[in-house]
Image (tube, rainbow, N blue to C red; front, top):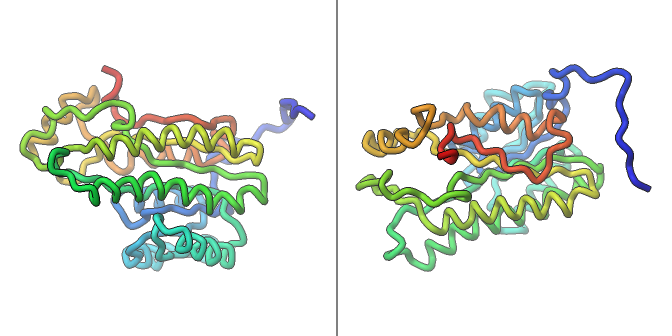
Length: 270
């Protein structure tokens, strides 16, 4: 039978819509620049956290500083390219928290060598982490969401999944954005639409955040070249993504799925 829309006599307060109190959020690549910031945002919104990383030392240190009685934080070592590793992480997560409500597929890598000298191994490594990792994590960690008929998956894309990198930005910085990185981020956007359709019967939403360039102490020439293309005249900070991830993880976006939320300061509008 078709599910009909209905209105509640008592609408939820907007603060409640954005709250993640009692939810369990798993973040891959949690020790990195973006991952640690996204973890903080979800934690501040009330979520209990599972921090997944191939090198979990920084995650463990962060967890020890922020764990409370009401908001436990579990740090796990896992490789997003190895299904058995993810299944072990799932088992440990369910043992501790009983379920997973939110998945943030943040783990990703790039490669900066000129494409003419790119090796097959470098090309494959980016494919494995960015595309295969997103696929495997979605496959494995959506299982408890299916059982409870609820969940939110947020994948991290990039503006370079939408437009080609402008080589004039990079100059001699050595940070030439690669074709394989762009291809994987475009793939993540389209995989997310596919998953949004196929997981909808299980009441699981799947969305993407596509950030612009995030400042990480790049060379001054690069930063100057980059911000010339930004209407807001600055690169992003990690904090610029925090509101977006809480929105897509929370009930505030309960009717949003298959969407690519671009957070780029206007880079792609001209």
